[in-house]
Length: 223
Length: 245
Image (cartoon, rainbow over the protein chains, first blue to last red):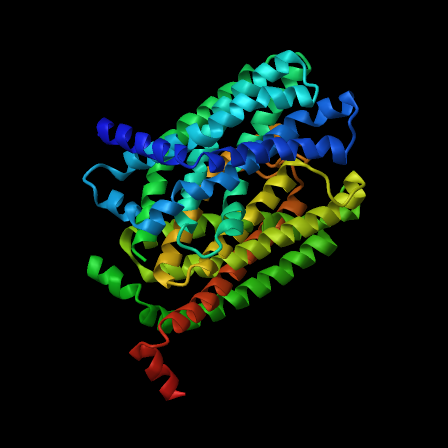
């Protein structure tokens, strides 16, 4: 079982690394969207600092949302998804491997680039550290919950808008606590509560989302 | 027992059985609703703080309750549909979604109408209004997914799973939004405590709540019947029904 997890993870990472240009797209999108806000609103440091947590978090959320498509789409189109479902390994584990790969390819790069954006938006250093922590806890949940949505819409033609319609409401708690943690940290207050909440949601999503995703995949495949 | 459930829940049997129920539900909903509105609009005392404008709660609160109740009905019947493959349950879930969305919409509109004199603005990012809005989005997502998938059975199963995921998420969403911001007046009707509301206001409110429930029951039966006729349009029992007309 662990072996299956490991091999699928390696396979997905290897496949993604073979098309490097695609890999950078969500990251560029993330930076680009954040850049739009100082241009659209105002570049004064004070104003930037108040909106920074929300802007960075919303952009990260949209970047993950746009990249969710590649979680199952290619495998669905070339039939390897059906092969995965036929394998004797529990589908939950395989789903978890694919989600882990997705997080390594989109969530983690977002976490790494986030400090740069924190500097762009003139966030104080403590807040940047909390931003990293909150993204580190929050982005896996975005991938996990997103996987449920993708597995339901992967067979639908032009499912992109539909996916955001069904997934965005479910992302709201993460957004609230993630952005609030950064906001509170910028004011120099403790943020343990928010980070603990994000951790709790991560634990919940980690245990339930793969289950829901595998049920959803079987529904999609039975079509 | 199993056999009995199977037969009882067949669309054909349901179609025959539901016709008289609709009549009873709608008549009693109408009577209770008219009486409740009369008590609420004319008999109940004026609020010492909010004046006459509080009277919108006799629509607002039952609609908000129903919007949550209908989502639960949807999720439970979707679960029954997925686990035991009972087609009628899927039909009830699909028929409930637009009704629930309408209740959520009514709750939002009445809430913002009440907000204008009370908070001075039609829309305030108050916790409960916001979670009601998110609930409306959940309904819209469910309906969008339901209509995007052409094959009826997988559309039911896929949107049913979404409803169940939504039910797991609703408490999380609700409490995170509550924690995020609250302006809304606290709950005034609770089961475990003595309600902090005058009895003359409480009675019409409860009457309206029951009226809304009965109204929903009648409506969901009508819609489920339509759904059954449409989905079974090529089956014999529907054909026979049409020929008899």
